Image (cartoon, rainbow, N blue to C red; front, side, top):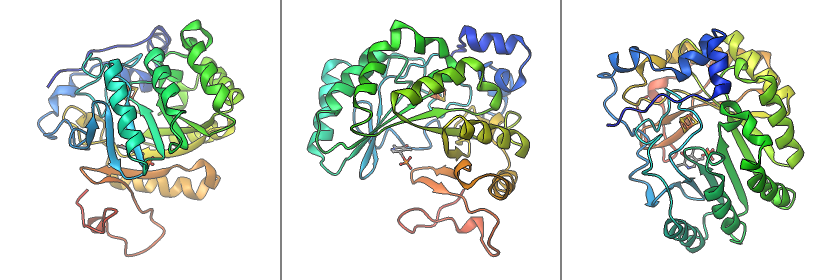
Length: 316
Ligand SMILES: *Cc1c(COP(=O)(O)O)cnc(C)c1O
Ligand code: SF4
């Protein structure tokens, strides 16, 4: 298994230099990264490799596919579920790979949604643009989603030539067909003034903005922290979509929180926040998919009774 290299942008570096612990813990390597390593034994609990139809394309749920545009990101998050891949050239797609992906999607008319992911689709705008151009020509694809953390990693890129072609293209179709942009944000301190202007810019483009968050020990695992984050995002015009339990990937042990604390926090937030500002709390159960965790509003709910979408019992 390859160790993911440390990589931060100048924007993140300045937050780290200001002594921001939430940012430091997410981006700088720690001795704890390897200390806990024997606890989780797999580097691909989501079994993405098994569900890879053609290079880069993960087809796990019937009507939608996840397309990894590359394994490259502007910065490397230490808790990345794709620790095994990020920062390598292995995920780079050639023109034939893009052709194969497009053919697969065209031939499977049950696929009506494509989620561009990675790596970060905004970090490799040329490849993403090529894919985007082809996708909008496929009649059976009615929704395009883009998962990104670039606004948080490298907000300056959004006002540069680097992204103007791709953003222009997105803007030109966004009012005919919905483009959902999911921004990965974990802590309110990530929402700097530069990041706020990217959010404004994306809203003006006409995309629909959602957020995704991962529960991270010592970073955001408190009610106050997450309340602050979700309220802030909601007020900026983003709908918090998911909060994930950190995946059991070897090397991520230091980030995994107690599931009882997570449930309690999400239950309290459900009481306190606008319904629209509360993301769905899910655990990506190895090999099964994203299963929502029940909150504490019902008596007699037993976590050992978790079932997947096929009604099979699973252990979490
Ligand atoms: C997360 C994910 C999706 C999207 O799932 P939603 O619940 O619709 O957000 C699709 N495919 C794969 C492989 C995923 O991991
Ligand atoms: S941006 Fe996403 S894919 Fe890239 S390192 Fe961070 S969590 Fe992983």
